[in-house]
Amino acid sequence: MSNDYSPLFLTIDIEITNRCNATCHFCPRDATPHQGIMDVDTFDKALARAVEYRQVVKDVSGLEVTVSLCGLGEPLINRNAISFIRKVKAEGFRCSMSSNGNLLTEDKTREILDAGLDEIYINISDIGEEYEKVYNLPFERSRDNIAKFAELSQGRCKPVIILVDHHDDKAHVKAMEMYWRERGLKDFHSYSVINRGGALFVEHMQFEQYTEMARARQELTEGGLKPLCGAPWGFLFIGYDGNYYLCCSDWRKQASLGSVFDYSFLQVSRQKLAMVMSREPVCKTCNHDPINMLTDELRALDRGEVTEEDVDKLRQTLRDGSVEIDIALGKLLDYGDAHPEGMLPAPDIIPVVATN
Image (cartoon, rainbow, N blue to C red; front, side, top):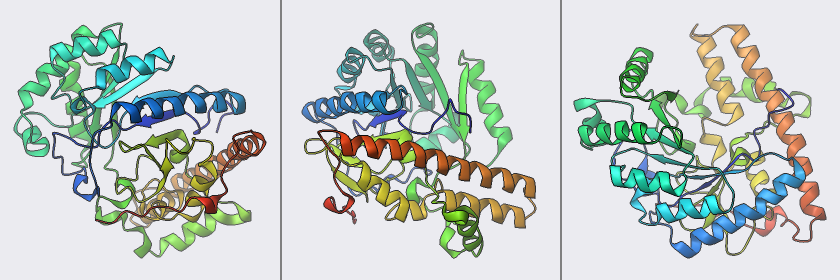
């Protein structure tokens, strides 16, 4: 990896709600043990913790910290979403938000733009009747809302269309991109279905059953290396309830690290690292976990879908990434140990494993 990039300390996700007005089948909302809407006091404290951590990141790495009003739900369900954007901007952060677009009326668009939102990520992977089957929302309303936002936001806020390839059909993704380009959208991001820390059952992502996992673990731990995922550090996550969670993939909210009212980001860093290194309770089932990623690639090699060169490239990327994360985390831990606020030792916060 290049020296000017690090997966650490990029975005703080503040989940202002994990409720949603859509019912996408590739979104395991029924696996979340509890749902709610973040109140003003909790948001204010979460934002204050983001301000604190921005200074830590500046001292340790100099990287920029941004704030995203994103989580497991539709942020516009929270009636305070606009005022939250204003507060984030008043603290000097770049601010982004995710949405499915259905509540993004023209009036709401104007409010969002006036509040200063920098980017909005709009998840809409189908059109027409297929959209309504998947999202259970009226398509024409979403289409018109998104097109109007693209028109009004020019030069003020960047809308990005998120295309989830839940059909496993690249031609479909391309067709969706062309559809939205014709309606004034210019920026797109597509990705395959994510298993959300194992909350969504995806048949080929049942990693523990595959013999290739032993090889993947051996190759990623060779030389004493510890495989490390960057998601918990690149996308720090505060749930609607004010608790820190391991990362945005913990849809089952299994790994609570304590409340923003009790601890800072810095204080819970060592406990978070312990979870990542042990792969408990979330990483062992998550498709972002390095061992699981290489397991999946090795299986693809056995099926003839990728080459040895592809496997070698991914293996090296994961190893290099783990080294980079380890170095950066070493600096963070040293900073925490020397900082007056300190850092809690891993055993002092016991993971809360949520059950349905």
